[in-house]
Image 1 (cartoon, rainbow, N blue to C red):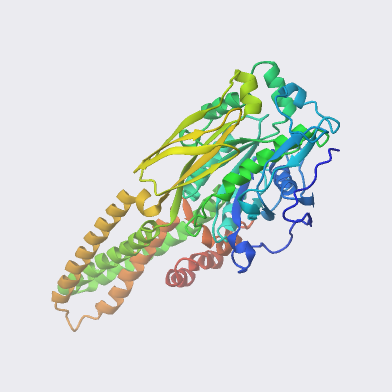
Image 2 (cartoon, rainbow, N blue to C red):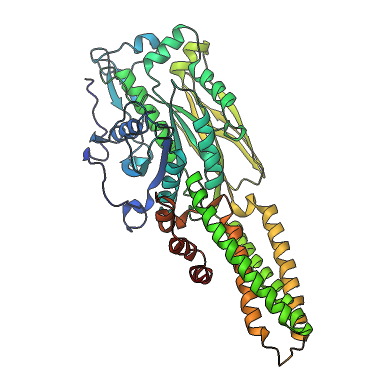
Length: 545
């Protein structure tokens, strides 16, 4: 085994995989409050757990105990978190005399042993400041059980317990093409977590030095081929996602393989360390077929109740005098408008905020050790980088590695331009992540909602004035019962519209889970209990009908 010293900061430590209660960073008031929460997603047996294990080794954990799966069955059965704390630094190779190794062919580096070189850590960056990462491992998708949507519902439901989320990783072996599973996942994230979906980071695993050496020998650019295949196979919005190419199970007898793996860990953690915390309080759960089946029964019950209430209201209208009939009809319209106003104001409150939304990331990664050998490039001097958004960019978070540096940065509204520059015989490595706010992103929708809310309020004001002007017949007692029925009809209609939606608030998952994951048909009382989560009054009417 290569004599690879564990990173000296922080102190090396044994790692025990957490069990039991979900540990939510930020809720304990301690050091984990500032954790960088990273959700790790991917298909079964594609390297999620081995990636987390290698990041633990990079951070100095002596023996990360993380279950590693084989075949098409996921070894990770439940969502779990893995804390990793480390200073960030790169590694280099030195020969037996202690001199840095330079200008060696890639093919020769791939054959190095302990006798040829030793792996040496650079000094830590930023005066050794320790970054705290919380890597959230998840069950594999696209496994033989075919429960992807149910798995995602569980994952998103647990994520909603977090105070924030910084990044999402999608892990896939370079030996497997991006296909249907990734498309489904990306669509799910766009609909359930739009604040961060554009910031998904693709991790291509199993990128061993042997695989790169073989590609070099046949004059193939493995990275370029992979990126082109990704763009052909994925949704348009995902084609600009940043990619990392990593060997998460390097040959420990090869110091070059260990250096490449550790430096890939460094570059990934460097990007993750500057990802801003994004709110997860308004994430949505996309309904699975199983949830939709349950909701179908709920909707049938609610529609029957709505029909009965409407029939009772029509009866009150028929019995009422002409004056009272007009008043009740106006009260019914008032109740409908108030229910609509509540929904619009809630939606406006979600959108009209300064909470941040990730727009995307631009990453430049041109390694001297690979690119120059393949393309015969002598000097990787600079690269012009640009990013265009569909709304105003509010913040740009940048990183660089090695001698790279950003120059001539220009941010104007929806457009960002800059140049990434490196020195002679140095790799170009830098990233820029772009953010906006919910208020900027949803400006047109906010304007539409405000206009609609004004119209509703004007209509309500007009109707209330009309109602006040209608003289009630004192002998007609329909007003009290009529007002109650108009309110109940409006509330029931509003609830039907809410349950018909394809998503629901992820914060409700802990309460609704027992109804949506049961293997028996819900009874009438259980259906009423489910409705109780949304509307207490309608649930009582449902249980008594």
